[in-house]
Image 1 (cartoon, each protein chain N blue to C red):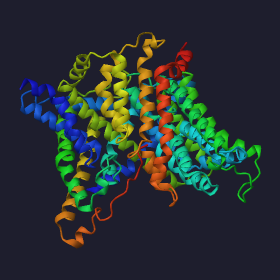
Image 2 (image 1 turned 135 degrees about the vertical axis):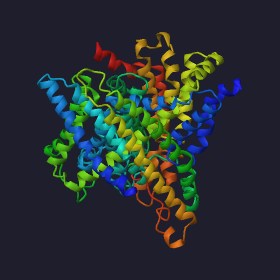
Image 3 (image 1 turned 60 degrees about the horizontal axis):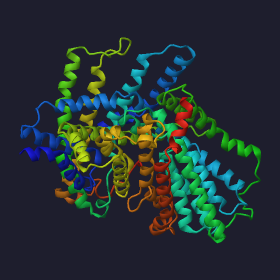
Image 4 (image 1 turned 135 degrees about the horizontal axis):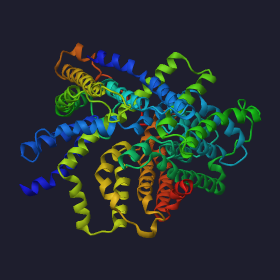
Length: 178
Length: 455
């Protein structure tokens, strides 16, 4: 499951490059050819949305989400695994679950009414980006379950298996907060 | 029962704080606590069991479909790409040669580079780490006072969060429903003022005690002669990029989103010209940018869920009510907010503070009236945002939990202790406060530029 979310994310990072090209095209058309395109502008935020939603789970696996490590950095790997276990059960999974549950209705609603952009010249098929919310959060859920299982193996599993989990070597932050 | 429902929004914060310190990702803690309180409200019959639906539509409408926020991944990519293309290294080498006869020249160069990097990348982690790696070893070798050297690098590196194009200002503009371009303009004055304060401080310290920062008069083996072409080669590309990006926004030719796309493209072209554009580097830059973007937006989505539940439970009315109850004027509210943000800065980063605090106080801020203190009352929100921004920039520097200090510790040579770094930032934190107070008393420091440009 972790590999799935990582694979999808590794492909999605190229969206940055595509986004850049779309903006450059949009600006060129708008300034020099005076063809403003609502479609291109809407495409820009569609791509941006897809970019971060599809990377949510991968960023969790890579430990890139901000944590307040003031106290937790002094804790041993066992406490860290316990916090991860509780955190996934108490926060991450219910949160993902609620978004998926209510998001499903939200997207279904959009499909049913064949919702399109409020602007006449905008993009059709609003349900596409809305279903990306579901996919993104589902991937985050997968990453959360993977991490939860890992924490369980580390805390209660047999020793040789436990040593293979990421809790043995405390993962470092992969990005700084901008 | 009645009373309990009323304090529910406050209870959200009381519950949130210990969980934030658990070390579990803030984005999910926010989402989880928001959801928990919503469930509590539903079970108490205070909320309709379908209203979480609104949270989703809020995430969609307030985060995903906002065109201005698209600028954020682009600016992040631009900064990360420029960092990899070795622009800072060239700049530092050149400036080091230019200022070698001035006492404290290296420290002054670091501040100048801080400003230039800030205007191109605006990524604190990158600027601080880069300057620590490049400049700190040289400064130590020349016998610089360690706290002076570390303080200069840490403070100059954090200018990026304030000086446009800054992702923090884009986020603030969105939360306060004001224009990002306007905030960019308003941030120029205060950030240059702060840079001048730093330089003035360094100059005076070194003037009094030259031993703190010996001049680099003896030529090193690596010190080549200073040539005009070297100056041009290192200064022109970043300055040109800054001019294009900021110029097009300020001149009204492009929205911040459009300018960010052009800037990202420019950074890519620059890397190509410098022959730094290989496939592995590009892949790595893309992945780093995506992770940073996701980190920020993951938190954005979580904070949206949290603050929307807060609003559903009547939190905004409660805050306004409490403010009225204390019967204090706008100045007291503003000062109180500033002190709270400053104190929060000791433990939290700008992202958490902005995304959690700003939505809560936004309705209050819009109502503040400072009478004739501001030449143009329509600029109250801009002024407030910049005050907040200067304050939050300080949060990077305040021990024990300043991000800039940790980045620096991670990249510094072994001999530099965390104690030296803490000691080094103290005078700079005081300078930050001086800047903040100046801006409080003299709003035109920020507002002069946007007012003049829009006229």
